[in-house]
Image (cartoon, rainbow, N blue to C red):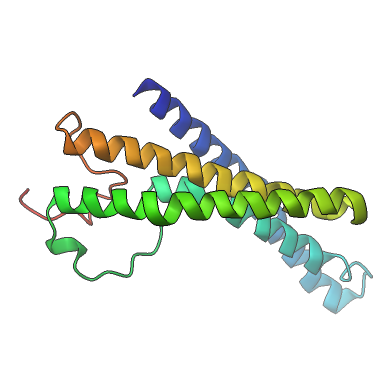
Amino acid sequence: MRLLNWLEAVIRTVGVVTAWATVVPIAFFTGLQMLDRKLHLGVSAILPDLSTSLLFVLIFMTLGFTYLRDGHVRVDVFRRKWSPKTLARIELMGCLFVLLPLAVILVYYAWDGLMRTTKYAETDVWAQRIAAIAGPALLGVAGVIVVARNISFLRGHRADVSPSSQEDLPHGE
């Protein structure tokens, strides 16, 4: 479990650092773009591309962080009524049959895109391509953490379901 906690700390650190390293420049570039419209500074041609690239990096590099914090969107309306064991089983199946295969597919195709980028594209898109590999890879690691923790929970070695948001758990259990 120490390895899982260390991996989660790495994912958390990458997520927080990425968020601060991208959100502040995105806000700055957006403000600068608004000023450019009024003052005609001549920088507005590159700002939308920079903001879009940073947003892409932000989204991809925080996928694993968001998943471990149970911050992703859930579409099921039955979750509050299910027992923790049912939640763990559903999360386990979702990780094994959806999240992990998706992460592998995304990394595979992103790697191909990165290899083509290094041959034909300019270096300004490399950050996006690297984030397109690293983000799903971190999401896959987060999925492995969730799988291991839920197996541990179902075997009775762990007290709570992973990922868990205290407000989503059934009351009185």
